[in-house]
Image (cartoon, rainbow, N blue to C red):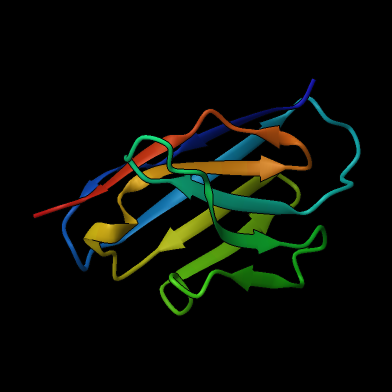
Length: 114
């Protein structure tokens, strides 16, 4: 059974940086790409797409709201996907989720505040 565990979240000041990690376990074949999404802290807010990386790692894609500030990468050998977040803004405050195929992690909180 595939499991995803996010780490690296926390509290950071505006303009600061964080690196999220998503570690996968329980799968034997590398079939899908990976993505990050986020959910703002407002009731009823759906998950917002943030970034994605292909299975090979050769192709990446970003939401316009994070383009130029966030970088997605992966370590195929360790089955870890990263989200480097720079120049963070208060509006980046959210619960961040990684996703592999139809599997979601439990989410990790990122708070950007002074």
